[in-house]
Structure formats: structure tokens, C-alpha cells
Image (tube, rainbow, N blue to C red; front, top):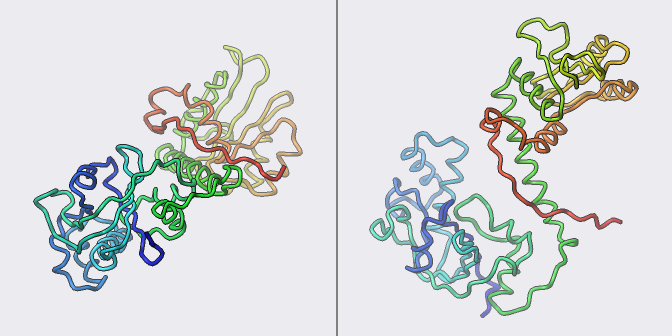
Length: 338
């Protein structure tokens, strides 16, 4: 089978695979947006699709309208009979490869949630392990429908029966990209939630709780003027025995400069330690100042996230509810420079 001259389309059956039966048992692929009605009634211009989406989904964010309209437009006007379709099923965790057989058909009776349909002949079902991580990453997009371009050759090879090259994970640079993307998304989520929900004094309570998970007892200053110290942390019950840690927190995502760091250090007595925690970053001057002090430590937003993930299991239900996280395993990007 020569598939060099046809387009590859990736399609998803909802976030939970709710159209899996329609796709695989009834040999029809479909997309949602049922409120729009028959898409063939719209003029063959993208602008008409945008207008229809805006009218039927008034609560949709403006930036999402072109994306939704574009997917519908491509399904009706750009997808052609003979094109190939890739369906990564969430139900059986297989990649199903097929050929588009028919033109666009508005069929709300067969599956009301996916009334915009096309008939398809399934050609091959392949395990996800057959593909490189990059190919899986491309077809894992959040979009319901899009054209596969970057890794189309891998899917062509499967359909033509050409053996795929065995690529060691260490040489697949997309592994690092996948891992970095997951980590970045998690980091952004945590920092955004903390900045929005714990602005000001509540952030001091949160940092105190994090210190508790590390074995410290803490005293949090009451709301209002705190003299530059938000938390006093210590190991013993009464707070007399060293080490005594004086903590200042910043619930902002901006850059903290040397004046704030110097002010904290001015409140640190001999034999005590200073700790400044921020959701943001520090200026170079602040970092250099802290490096010159053996009893001063700066924690920025990125390092704070690392500490949160490290001690998340010890958080109480209040903060687990604020930051609902689930442990997952991601590929480890191997160092190939050694």
C-alpha cells in the first residue's frame, strides 16, 4: 500500500474514550460540537465556522473559538476520502490505523454526542510500543482532530509493513521533551494555585506546614506587622535549643532583590539561621549576598515545588485538597554526554 501522497489525521474519542464503540464497532469516526448542527450548511470558509461557534457557545473563551472552528472546518473540508486516520484508543491502549471512505455526513441519530461523522475502514491495530516516544507524544495532543506531520513516516512504515528502526531511548531526544513538559505543567500548576489561593499571610501558614513535614516545630507571626519575620522554626518543643531558623516568605511571583534579603539577615542573630521563601525568583545581587553568608538560605519557586513534591505525602488534607496531585512515573532523560 503506497501512502506517500495522503494525509494522516489523528482523532480522539473524547477524554474518556466515550466514542470508542462508534469508532471501532460501527466503523465511523466523529467529532462533537453537536449544538452547531449540520456543518455542511455553513459556507466553506473558516470565518463562517468561527461565527457559528461563537453564536452557539457564548461562554467559550475567545482564544478557543478559532481552535474549535478550525477542527470542524478540517473535518468537513480538508479531510478527504482516501486519507488515513490514526485513533489512539484510551480503552484498549492500542493505536488503530484506518482509511477514510466517505464524505462528511451529519448523523445525530447514530451517536448524538458525535453527530459529525465519516465512514472509515480500519486497516491495522498496533501496540503503542511499536512507536517512538516522539510519535506517541504527537498523537497525544489535547486537540480532537489534527493532521499528523512530524512523525507521519512512522505510521506510513507500519501500514506498508516496513520495519521501524529500533531507536534506543537514550538517543530519542523526545523523551526529555515529554518529561520536561510534564514537569513544567506540574510546576506551573502548583505555583499558580499557591499565588492565587494563599496570597499574603496564608502562604506563611503553608510554608510553616512544609517545615513541619521536615521535622521542625514552627511559630507563625499573626497577621499584620511582623518585624520582617513570618515564621520561627526550631527542633525542640520550647524553641530554646538551636538551630533556630527565622523565615520570611514572599507570596509573589516576581523577583526578590537584595534589600529584602539583607533586611531578613539583619534580624538573624549569631547562631541563628535565616530562610527566605518566594514563589518567584531572586536577583543576581540577592543570590550573591546569600552565598556569602553561611547561615542564610534562599528558596525560589522552582525549589519550593521540588520540596513540595518531596514531602507531599506528609501534607494534611487541607493542603492536599488545595494541590490535588497524583504520583505518576515519567521517562527518565538519560545523559548521553558522558
